[in-house]
Length: 307
Image (cartoon, rainbow, N blue to C red; front, top):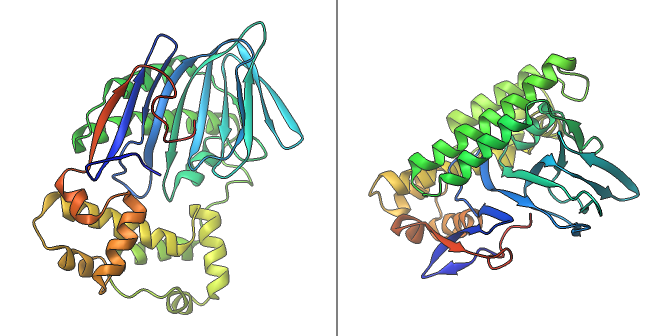
């Protein structure tokens, strides 16, 4: 659950000699959004016990070494490598006893997060890869940590660095082995479905009707859509609706019931319930002020996202 104060979702910035982290960053896009990022210099044998996370997380090792363990598998990881944690997977990691690592990380999500992670060379079964330009990535994460305001402009500024980080990783993969069988191109009907949904998400969309127009079954469309995009058509629709609703709340004075209808919900109460589940605050509180950043001086004082 998000920490709340006066009906506002609280973002946290923790800074100490060995740990810095910006957490619970408000989402402003459905395709891809940054949830948190940070830097840490660990102590010998510092353990993160196996736990699942809500976001996709990539750690970039700047110095030292350690191990990551998942099920009965263990990976030895050292400077110049990156390791990936997928949402919902019980993964732990520990720094080396004699040469503990330091690393930076980003945690992100969105309807295309799984796709971008795959293009960047990461899957659940292949969570570790070399990273040739790791110093550049560390510089970009430092830029994100310096941008702590929660204005739309600052959020776009942070996202520009996230996109650059992912583009570096994807470009390295393309240079090594292009897109392989684990990352097939989207079928034409999936691209059509995405375009159709993007233009009509404010209407009463039915996946079955859309599949019939495309000449495929509902289950086949949903399976191919999830494989290509990283989420089901229903989740894709939800993210588009919530992104549009958030934008209208921020940039207009339209009543909530009008915004609800404008994004495909005739029942305002149902809309408000879904909106709060998505953003962590009600539509009215979202419009009033959204979030604020609180500063902490010790790791663990702010407990929200699992790093």
